[in-house]
Image (cartoon, rainbow, N blue to C red; front, side):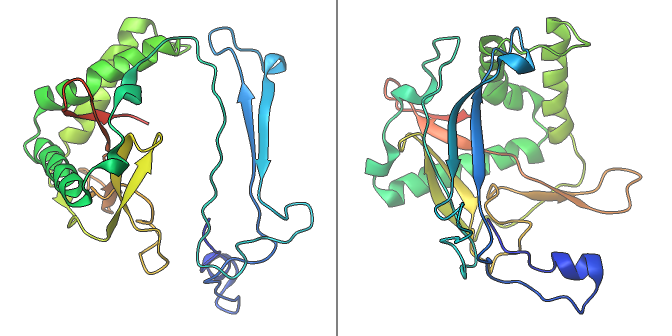
Length: 241
């Protein structure tokens, strides 16, 4: 969570205050639901967990006065498939930090090169098979497309990003090491500090600026890269979250 910043000023004028810290009335409320996505019906949704920040009911936010606030919780997910994925990964928190950072840096720069060279085959080899597994395991289906078209469209989504002309990658800096999945998944993400421009905070450290033909303004894109190291092969693998 971040403070309002200049949101009120943009909406109502410069007479409104600028908020650089969180207010006492801030809060977080999250409801986790269980649903059968293959035969979805809203009346069949089941709430399995509700979480909220301390002081939610008394309007006493523990992050009051802070420049940002991070909130985490856990829950047990029941899924309709057996998917090994990153569960057999190494606990990267136990690896030498210098070695791990070098491996991640090299992987990020490799991924950047794939985009710079518009290497369609490489982007498919990295991403496509794992996405096919996840789409199949989750019974994903688009209401107006059959299964074959879904995979064709998935390829086009990869190619669309890779084939963008005149991509200017930002320097790989101002990032922090972030772990997920009990330490088995890792990435570089932009720092959450208030000193970082808010459009970058917490996002992938790998970012580029581009402008499509006919557009007036340049935009930013962040290829999201989450990585684990397989215990069996000791190789670094990209994981989609």
